[in-house]
Image 1 (cartoon, rainbow, N blue to C red):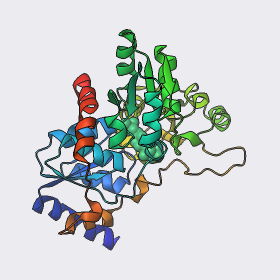
Image 2: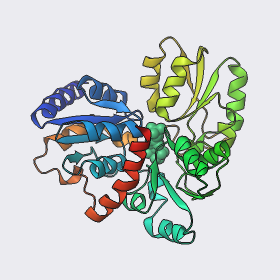
Image 3: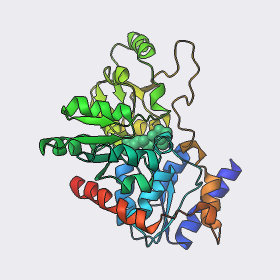
Image 4: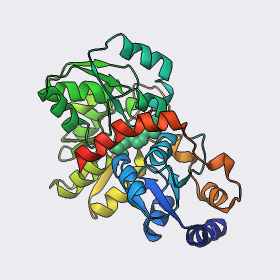
Length: 322
Ligand code: 13P
Ligand code: SF4
């Protein structure tokens, strides 16, 4: 605890000294989220992280989350230094969607509009017509469908099939998944619901369809926090990364939050409702990134041609959301 207090104080001083601001995702450790808030940074979903980083006047952004979030910040603000606690924090969706294979998939369907989730590399974004996050995906696909567009969707198959079902849009789906949300189990959730019949079920749409079908609210991290705040229930069963409980409990004080079951049927879960890459973000790593005079191991670089290519669909999303 002494160490934590030391790092927190050092980070606060370094943020000022280096004209830096901390931008954190809801899935990072509560102490990082608290520090971001305390120091005038932001804690939010991936859409708001992108917007905040772009609009904030600081010359350095330190992004606590996973690599695609740092890359998105750099694509939108090339003039800023974008640092991350560790560059090893990736995402199974990003890893499962290499540019060469994805590009070939797109080439095979040249008449389709390419919509990709923000959880992708800069190169995959550069191949896309639109980038979306879970906060805005439904509206953007609705808009494209109304224009009569056929859609290629990548990489999250669960989110893609949820959106296709909701909108009726014709979508070809890349078969990727988030290792955290893919672990939520409908059978075990049904059993838990019997124990808490009055609980509302909140589900992130990266979860399997069988789990999404049981939801009282489906949405991005920020939309789920909002649902906990506004639904009248006293108890919520939450199917997303447990990092969200910190802000959700603040937003809905006095309500009981329960983790949705992972694994089940005797099978061990791989990630147990906490993203192993989000968990790599620690106070010490943030301190090290900020303290270093030559932070190569922490600095995000994006190839300039890819950056320019990725900027177009990213700006389309931000303008659509505005
Ligand atoms: P949102 O915060 O945009 O809902 O995204 C969740 C996510 O995949 C972050 O890892
Ligand atoms: Fe990727 Fe899932 Fe981790 Fe989010 S929670 S960064 S989607 S692996």
